[in-house]
Length: 165
Image (cartoon, rainbow, N blue to C red; front, side, top):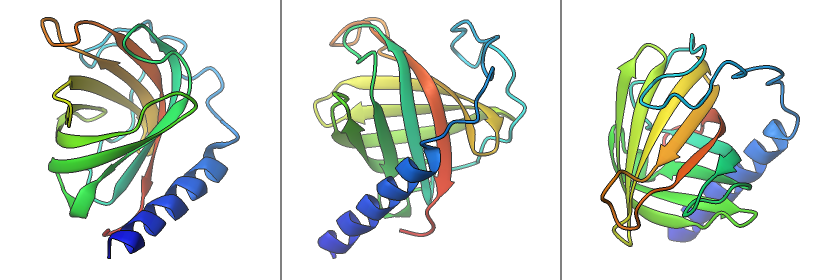
């Protein structure tokens, strides 16, 4: 069963990579100057109410330590988890892979927060701003006082429905 899930994830990741190889994000997010906390440009897409059956693919645009400033990764909730549960991240091009627990909250029509607690104990908070129902911008950061301290990463994302896992 575990091998089947891994195969399903691999097929999903390869499919997303093929589908997102050509970006249509010309000039999208050009008004977004970091903002955070749901701030920053645009955002007229509909944020989903949960992460169940969703594959989030992120293209990193910038980062400060401890985050990478390039690369990409996929985020997939395990076992059809809706707004909280376990996840795994598959990193590419120097972005590390990890597993842990997450909580997802829709904070507005076009915004959501995705909090991760990695297996190592590192807390990462993500603000998602949806330009469409399936794409937008992400800002990830480690909250003040957390260990390791600091770091911000920004990028774009696509969200693909991969059905009931």
